[in-house]
Every structure is written in structure tokens, then in C-alpha cells.
Length: 98
Image (cartoon, rainbow, N blue to C red):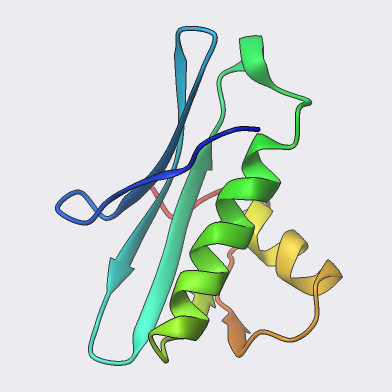
């Protein structure tokens, strides 16, 4: 099973797999967790890593009473497929906020 690390200083959730690092970056305000982007290197793609990062981030947001804002295209798609989260779609097209 993959281990998700949380770097609160960088505002990243991280998975290290086969020598590569995948991450989800977010920004926090008083009441909103803005999911800015998810990065999974091609070498470890297709393993459900981005989905696990999203699930972990969204559960963290729920546990800490943050509303989720998806400015990342992947986050927006993932949230549309997974009900039960308080979120808003702020995605502009098919890319991430950065």
C-alpha cells in the first residue's frame, strides 16, 4: 500500500514510489482548501496515485472543516465523480492553476 505524506510547510501531499515523487499542492485560507495541482510523473502513472492524493486531501479538508476549491482540472473531475465533499469548481479549462 502506498504511503501518503503531508508536508504542511509546503502545503503538499506526497507519495514516493519507485524513486519518483508525486504530489498534490494546495493553498489554505481561513475556511478554504484550494487544490491547485496534482503532479504524477509519467513513470508511475496509471497506478491510482493522483486519486489517492485527492482522497487524502479531501478527507483532510473534511476533517478540518475546510471547503474545497478545485482550481486543478484533475481535482475538478475527481470531485465530480466522488460525492460527499463540500466543494466549488474554480477550474479554468483543462489545466491547473499554475
